[in-house]
Image (spheres, rainbow, N blue to C red):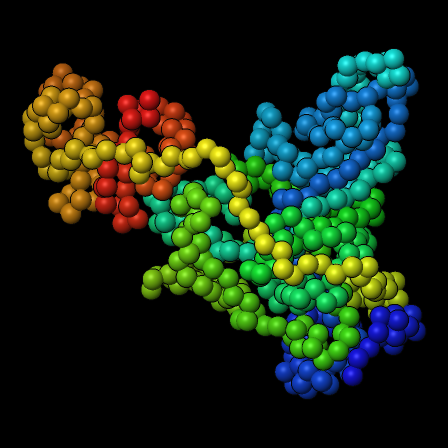
Length: 490
């Protein structure tokens, strides 16, 4: 039994189409089987709402009098890209405000624009005969724009890795704030409601597919950047009219010590053309697996610590090596459900018809890492053996080691090589001057550390930030495995 787009659209127009959400489809297939579900259901709606960093908007301001051709322009002091025609720009959601880089950015500007708020437009130009104006400083709203086109090169990841942190320091990432020593875990995505999880072979999702985008109608214009369907990481390139959209489904977000992005709502209808598609749209959370990845290792091939699935993730806990870790979502399941239901209502009310894709999306695309012509050095390449004293050692012994080995840093550990602190030649000098007797009174106990697999430039920035001249190198069990200092870096 098969259906066509034409038949389904005719049922939508007459108000006879049977439309269910992806969550509802699971129960239908479980109770009646995929064959009956294919006969009874016409459309399955999906939804996802989360941070989609590869998003932005093309804006056209119209010509000023006299005309200007922007060389640089700012919207609420966020620098927009100008490499288009005279008064066009592209504003990316991750573009940060220079003065407050973690508090405001492109995603916030787009949300405020969609909300109808006034936006300050400031621009400068090298004048030409046909564009004699050198500067503009004005205020605009979305209604003043000729075109406002949301154009997102990479949205709707098929699934996401789960991010954890094995190090002894807090990490600030695009996956949020990761606490040290596996203190938490973050994931993203709506699981069984995710559009690409319901059509993993792109049988109905392709170029020209009409979708719910940001509260309005949008279209898929191709596969997204980093499209990697072979590994279950497909992506979409989408666009839509920003003037039709709602701030409820486009929200700027600011991550502590990382930067800005935007939550974007996307919903895609899946026409039930045959039994095979009906079966795929009944995918369950426990059938969508993903990897737990250690973001404490800042490399492309971060260590995979295990696997989990969206059923367990939605429970709020995962297990790593017998340790239960609290996890939370970077996206909103509440809004994913709301999007799927709103799209369902549009279709049931005859407001939204389905498009047959003009072209299918590729399923064999391979994702390649960046080609690098210069080699990156890691801490393990430059570290040296650490000179160690135990935490109950006499200060005189520490001083003798500094003199005899002509070094400035002694690592303090317990008898099992666990890091306890660090002491410098200057600390010893102060101890003598102040008549200090106990090592424990002069060591620095809150130690800034690094790991073997950290790039050297990252370790260098950490030294500069904390105004220190050495970092103990530790493993994932807090054992000291070396030291790297300013001398090695120079």
